[in-house]
Image (tube, rainbow, N blue to C red; front, side, top):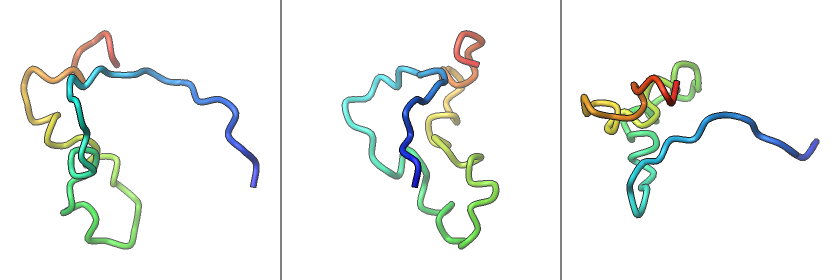
Length: 60
């Protein structure tokens, strides 16, 4: 396996002291064996807030 040497992308400050795995991907998204479409569930609970930074133009 080739090691990952560099990851590029944008970071979003979550403003949380701890991030529970259910914040990253809620459990109801894990009831399938397919990984297809799981990105839609990423940070779903945080995205539900109308003031979330995921929708902010500076982080897109």
